[in-house]
Image (cartoon, rainbow, N blue to C red; front, side, top):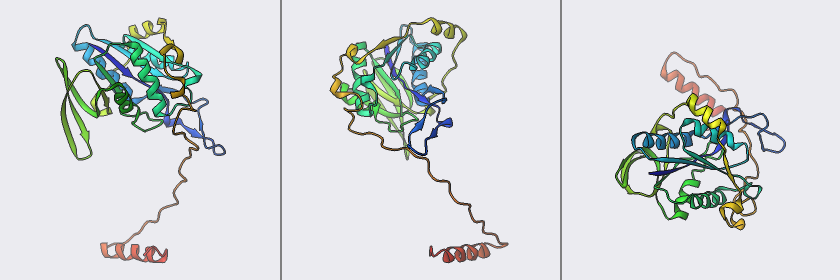
Length: 262
């Protein structure tokens, strides 16, 4: 069994700040982490590896050179191989252009049985890259996977919907995007950390993976972010008090009429 996990290094959004003048993210001094949903995808692959000897797990990512540290974390968790696509030509890619680069990376890797990815990245929240990859690779896909179980050359998944769950059975190869409820990612091991520290991270350029330069990067991206901003803080709320529900209701109605809301 050969599994490819698509992962992304993202800024820790708990510490994100936005430049009020330019509206852009301030990344200086902000730590980068393994995207949460992608960690769940990696854990799913590692659990398959634990129960199926001979399984190989490769983590594929696109990003700046600093993404090597995230890949070392993946190795320390148990991944067998990691690949970084890093090139100025790939910079500024939107989801469409990013999926083009990752698809080229997948084709460079060669044979695989399963591709796993997180539902979405916390810095973009688009949930588009995984499905775009599946379309371009001609793979069956299922999103929002809550549980999965391999059965020979097929996989049965339980997909979370807004009003319930859907159980589906797919033939391999296929692509699945997972949600955090799927599992709890494991910690890095001490042995894994030492191994990862000595590992030679494979870095490939756009030319190395043979991607059409006209389909990646900022200029090839049909969408782009013009401005990012934080919502203005809400004003102080008004507390309606009273000893009886009728008094509370009358007080609320009086306030709403005074503000010409009703």
